[in-house]
Length: 161
Image (cartoon, rainbow, N blue to C red; front, side, top):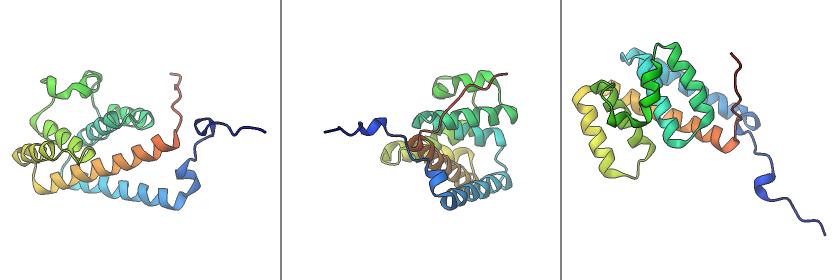
């Protein structure tokens, strides 16, 4: 009798490829979120910081690779990207950025009610309603992409320079 291979040895289903119509809808939603963020005045660098921080929290290597490149193209610095995981312990992020990062983390961990209330209060100090909404939508969207990539095990390969 032949034993079945362990579940972990089986290749993952790339859900974006298996169900492309749903993935395209997610991409369309992300485009709408990007537009809304730009329309309310959120800088592209801030949007990419949110994308990166949420991807760090979730451990999504694929999204980290994609959004690091996007952040650099948007004018973000290597120094700030290097300390993003410890943003609370630095002085390199402006109050608006700190508020957006805290709010993005609260969206990523919605069960932590106290952190959510603190993040929302901080956001209220520097962001208007449209900006708060946009930051939350950016965090929701990147959380969705993180799950697609993590559960599909999208490969991350070195890009030779």
